[in-house]
Image 1 (tube, rainbow, N blue to C red):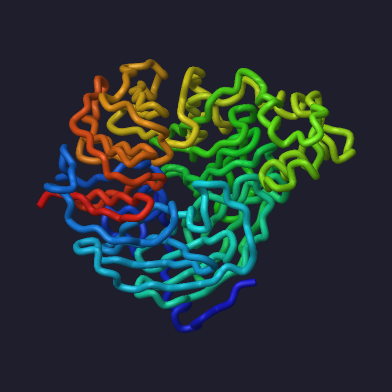
Image 2: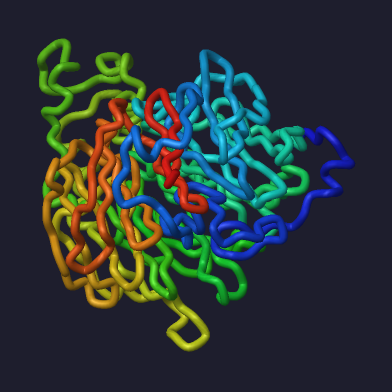
Length: 477
């Protein structure tokens, strides 16, 4: 149920169309209004970013935002991000030029929700149209504030039955706030009125074996009516933003995606590693208390993700006896085999067939968390270990594949790009700048000295990087 805080403030809400479309409250194309910037592309029109970044010469300011792995967003000179401490959840606004705190709102969690590390109560990135700031905490609800920090409404959402915790971020489409809530049970995509917080429509989705964790994207500018495009268990789908009707789907291209669909022109790119063998049953060996080679709910109950997974397998692929055997496990995960890869899909339009069509699929090693991006007709992605690949988005041809000089650990932070440069961050906080080109080349690398799971934001020559304890703003002094 939505609770209105001020009828006057609601009346002043402007219709927004964030992500792929222009908005009255979002005049600058350099704004970074949602997770991974404009329509989740990871690409900014900003110029003047430094090619070599280090704390001594390029650090403009830094501050401690609190715990959380949500990414910063920036619109009209203001930075918005979320954090948490204990049972409290925070939405804060900073001045991008100085890092000065302009306002901070606090809400409290209303229930416990599972969140496997590094997922946390503050993983979901906020979204803004320059007039409204919307934040989502899975254990507290959906909240809307003015850009001056006045609460406009709050809406109860949940509870959830996810394996590792809800982590997809809200997006704005036309006059709606959209949440993609893929779970082990009760999966759905929901839209709420940006003006009031009331539920506009709610559509069930396929429940995945291990859930899914991505954020939706929006059809390109010029596509009418607006479509929400989602990657999820078993299929890639398009929904009408106006009423949630599913108008098409591409089956068999995904299992449990974390990476969001990347919209580039009339193409969409999906990315998830191809599974060529079953997840080994032996991964549960440490939980087999009686050493009988089977796993009861009782044996795994201390692990919420494993408990929920075994419940799902026993209910849908087993005999319902509260015990999962290897044959039941293999039957469940057998449905995952040979799906995924880096998949290029042509969207349907006025001059194309009415159904989307897969143009090409690259089935070799691809990332599972760090999203690809497309910049000036080249698609780039980075994998664990610091392997960078450049690809022809039209054909899937590999231009170059190589390892960064310093390598890298895991990559949870997604690459971002502007000014002919790519910015890459691994989980140890190593920041590498790469010249964007088919035959890309490394420009600089530096260690920030803290783990990093959030994706950077770019705004008017500035790069904002959130690590485990610090938010830093880099730029030319």
